[in-house]
Length: 339
Image (cartoon, rainbow, N blue to C red; front, side):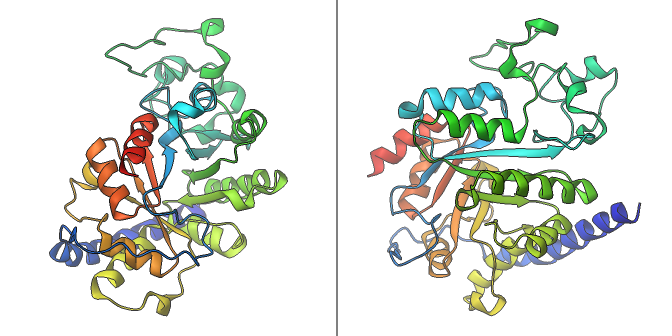
C-alpha cells in the first residue's frame, strides 16, 4: 500500500510541476523560423542522432495503422515487408502480468483492443491481475479497423490465430532477431506498469535486454516518475528517454536559452508529440531552433505520433531524428522524397 501511495504522490508532484510550467511555455510558443539553418554535429557519439534528412522510421505500437497493435502479426508484417515499410526502430509498450511475464500492451487493460470485457465478464481487468495463460483467450484483433472493416472481429477459441494472441516481450524480440535477415533494428520500449509492478517490469526488461546483448539498441522509457527514478538509479547504463518532467525542463531551458549542461541530463533522447498529437502545435516542439538546441546538447529527438505526410516532411526538413508513425510506409516514402 505504501508503494502505491508513493507512486500516486510522485505522479501528483510531477503534474503539479508540469502545471506550473505549461502556462509559461504556452506564452513562449512560436512557429519557428523556416530560414533557420539546420546545424549538424557529425562528431556526436549519440547513435540515435540521425543524419540530416534521414530520420529513422519507427513503427508506433508496431504499426498500429496497418495491423493490430502490439501483436506478433504486426511484427511479422514489418519483417516480411521490410523493403517496403522501411522501418528502422520498433516501438512498443509493455506491462507485467500477475505471474511476472512482460506482455505487450499500451493501455492498463485489454478492453479497447480485444474481447476482454466479454472474456472476463467485466470491464477494466488490469493486466497485472491476470496471468499470461488467462490472457491467451483474448483476440487482439477484435477492434482493429482497416479500410472501414474489422477483419478479425468475432474470432474466438481455436479460431484466433497464434499471432493475434497476447505475446511476451522476449518472444517478440526473439522473433525479430531471428528473422530480420541481418538487419539490426533499434527498439523503443515503454514500460506502462506503475508502482511496484513498474519496478518489477524494469527488472524483467533489463534481464531480457542484457541476456540478448541488446544494450546498444534499446531505449526504454516510462511516464511514471517513480519508475523513471528507479530506472536511473538501478540501471543507468541502459539508454532512456527523458521523463515528462525532464522534457518540460528541457523545453524551458531551450526557450530561456539557458545552458542545459547545468542540469547534466542523463537521457539520450526526447520522445515528444508533434502536430495533432501536440494539440495541433499549441506548443511547436518541432522547430529547427529546438532541434539544433537538442543536438548541440547531444540529445536525439523522436516524435510521436506522426501520421500525416505534411508533418513527416516538416520534421524531416527540420532535422528530426526519428518519426514514430502508425503508417511507416507513408513516412518512409515521404522521407525519401525529401532527400
